[in-house]
Image (cartoon, rainbow, N blue to C red; front, side, top):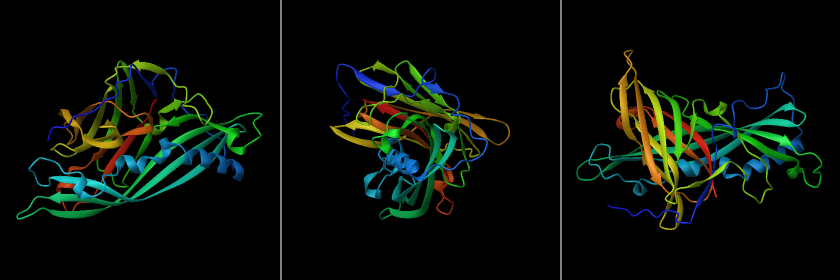
Length: 316
C-alpha cells in the first residue's frame, strides 16, 4: 500500500548533529590510573540527569516492534514478518572519577522480551517466538560546574557522549562501520564507544548548542552500514530511526537495502547496506542499525543473534 510521508516544511530545519571535526573528540578524558569512588550525592545527581535525557532513555522505544499484528511485510516469503517485542527495560550506571572535576559514566540498558516470527502456512500464518535479551551501552563524560551550589543537580553537566554499542551475547556477525549523512554533512563511527561527541553546555531548559546548519526542508537523511558475515546469503539489516508521519512522532524500523557484497576469500563476506528517509520530528535520540544473522529469522531452531550500533542525533 502506498504511503504518503509528511515532512517538516518549515523555512529551515535546524539540526544539531554529532559531527567529525571540531565537535568530535577522538578520545574521552584520560582514564584514571586507579578507580576512585564517586560520592553518592554526585552519583544521584548524574543519575537524575541521565534518567531525564532521551539519548539514554529511548533505546527500548526505538527497537520495539510491539505485537506481530503491527509490523507485517507485503512480501510472500517464509517467514513473511518478524519483530522485537520488548517487555522489560532496565538501566544500570557505573561511575569512574578521572580527576576532581571529571567523571565517566557507563550507561547499560538491558532489554528483554521476545522475537516473534510470522511463518506463512496454509490455511493461516503461524507465529513462533524466540527469547530476546540485548544490552546497549553508552558512555557519558560529566564535568563539575564550579560555583553552582544551589542544587546538586546543577553541579554537573554532560560534555561528551559516545555512540551506542550492543546486541546479544552471541553475535555471529560484525558491524565494521556506520555512516550517517545529512545534506553535505557526514559522521562515521568505527568503534561506537570510542566515538565521542562534545556537547557544549546549556541550561536544562535549553537545547544543547552543537554545530548547526540549514538542512534541506525535506530533511533528506541516509544511513550506511558495512558488515562482515559468514552467511553466503544476505543478512537481516534494519535501521531504527525517527519518522515524522501524518503529524505523529514515532520511531520506524526500515529494512536496509543491499548495495554491494564481496567475497573475502576466507569464507566471509563484506556487505554494504543503506537506507534513506525524508523528515524527522524534533528531539534527542539515537539512530540505530541492527544486524541479525540470517538464521535468527529464517531458522526456527537457531538462537537469535544481533549486533546493534547507534549514533546520537539531535534535531530542533
